Amino acid sequence: MSARCSLIVNGKSVRVSTGDTPVEAALAEGMIGSVQALHGAGLLGQGPGVAPRRTKGRRGRADALKLATSTAAPIVAAEPRHVPTATRKGTLTALRVLSPHVVEAVVTLEKRIVLEPGHQVACSIEDLSPVTLCPTLRVDGSAELNEAVFHCPRDEDGTSLFEAVGLEVAVKLKGPIGRGQYRPGGGRLVLVAAETGFGAIWSIAHAARYIEPAREMTVIVGARDARDLYMRESLDWLRRTGVGRIVMVADRGRQRPPDVRPGPLTAHLPSLRATDVVHVAGSAATVGAVQVLAASVGARCYPIPVEGFDPA
Image (cartoon, rainbow, N blue to C red; front, side):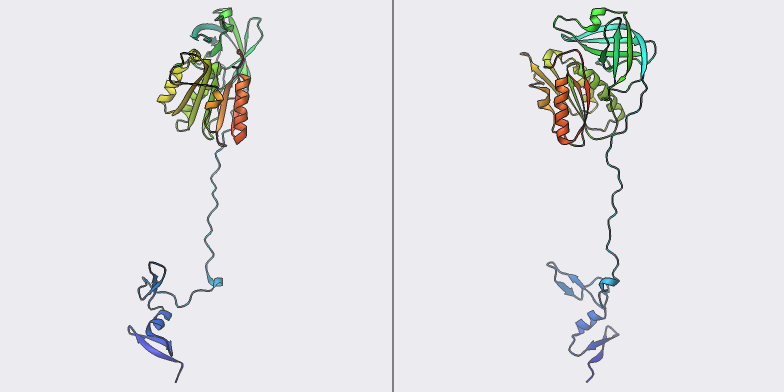
């Protein structure tokens, strides 16, 4: 008897071996297929399509699918725009007391000085030694192109650099100075200000809300005395534009408002991430403490030291 014979299945001739069942012969010829049952077992005769008689060998199989490596560039802050150093002359035209220890001074310039938000300038008044200040905006966000607005500290006697010399005095500005200016791009923007350091932080925050409205931002401001948190109008504007986390801190003050937290400024910083971009403006002690915290997680930190008051 021959070891193989012919079998007719569904009108087609199928070659089978002695001892094979009709189902096995049909499977071998690819006339029916199998599907996986609930637990992985094959259900004979219920295949959705024709199965091949033999599985291709490893050499005959197509190469495994390889996922393409992502070509997306990592989040990197843009390089700061080069701004040439310039000198401008002007006149002190306005003074306004913002709090017991803060005064707002406005210098009207003969010609606009080009600066990035957060840049500082050397300010010379008559025969006095130059001081480093940061041009900013009024607390309501206004400023003319030919105006340089400064938030300046006052001493315990209620006097300041600009109040001591009076209005209409000649002023000379030279800048930019420093590398703490605003840089579009990057991760979350963490802005930290102590006392009149808010002037620099306010100019950065205001610009960022227009240039990058979708960028996440956190603002922490502090003062030794709660009465010197003069920036409430500015913070209200930031809230209206979508800034979700704004913290006010005061080191002392019996009449601390309920929205002002006690303790040092650095105790209220958020948990920093390596992708954060931190700008800090204030005394040397505040700037140094924030720089250490940023460095501990690998975050970029741009310091803006502020002259004119002792650290808390």
